[in-house]
Image (tube, rainbow, N blue to C red; front, side):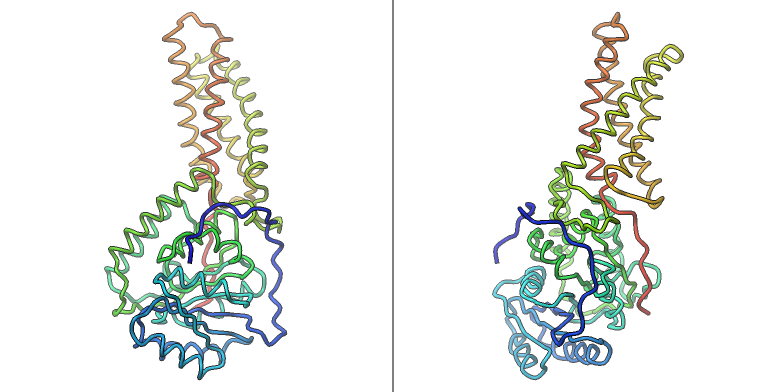
Length: 418
């Protein structure tokens, strides 16, 4: 399988409005993928347990796909036998390793409208599977993830794994400003129409696959449903924590760079529902420029009114602070389509950080002017401020897009597992 790029798919229309998945047919509504590598011990009991659970509790047709990524033990033989014995089980053999590669291959070839995956050790209690996929079937959400870090989750694991998990998710929140709570719980689902748009954009073929897909989806404004899960750690886990951590750090750096450049996510991923941010980069630039023009005029007017009273530097700082608050609020609503009070304080706080950068740039410009030309008049000062504001505006847009309004307000996990 070739590596997938992050460039936007050309000539693709935005995702249509969500509609319920048709269920009145014999074809599988849900395809649950079990990615495996050298799991000859756990594979058969886990697949039989998963099959029995779905047969008893899932109200629609389903399929289980065993995605074997280059196992060297008896895993392929067991997968073929299970596929022969159980009508709802299929096996897929890949010649290269990588959990992300296995999921990409299995999801790409699946005709089911809802796609999911579970870890072969079934650490997550299967009672959460129906609550996980129900919002996707109903048309409520685009993706769904199990979370071990939200209220209502019950987790049994050692302190080492607990510390590693929390540090990783804290790192994601601090570097990529994500809103989802648990990136790597092996219990996720996605609508096929969304997967068709997401999968070509995800480059990672290993453990960072989940995180990359979630970051792209969230930045595109897609709706991610979270389900608190009961989770028991597998003491026999073969995950190399050090190697995985290094790969994740490289992935975070790569995605962070793409977000900073504004190349992710493409506008084609957005829904046309009306309750999500709308418009691509061009429309955002137009709206941002309009808000910026109004803010600049307001800033210059306030500066002119305040300068005779408090002096040039203080007038610039006060005018910029007042306009920054208004500018952040206007861009939040008009440019990035965020409605409601959720996350408003966080956005304003980040907006003030951007304001400080703008203040440094404009105040520094005035200071250089006064040092170079002490007798410069008000008109020269205004001209310098206009030039400095243009530079600050470009910086502000990049930071607003990649950081201030880069994610939806943090969502609460919805109860659904116990």
